[in-house]
Image (cartoon, rainbow, N blue to C red):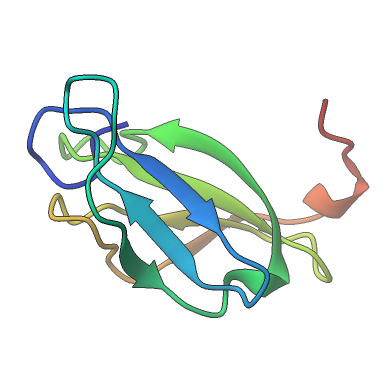
Length: 98
């Protein structure tokens, strides 16, 4: 999805230390310089969805907490970051992802 509001598709990736990185799409099949947009993501074992879940026109993400199975909505701010997360589900640790 487009997380930084430039109209181009971006990629999110988590590293082994739990840092979340935004790789901004260039629109020509490549990516610009990555930017760290989060930390502490090592407790999340899945990013389950990307889209505008709260209807504000900005891409959000859903992530699952490994230990608790809590499902969290991270509303996008439209500039490559997120607003305060909200827990939107419980017990998701019992589900297997394809």
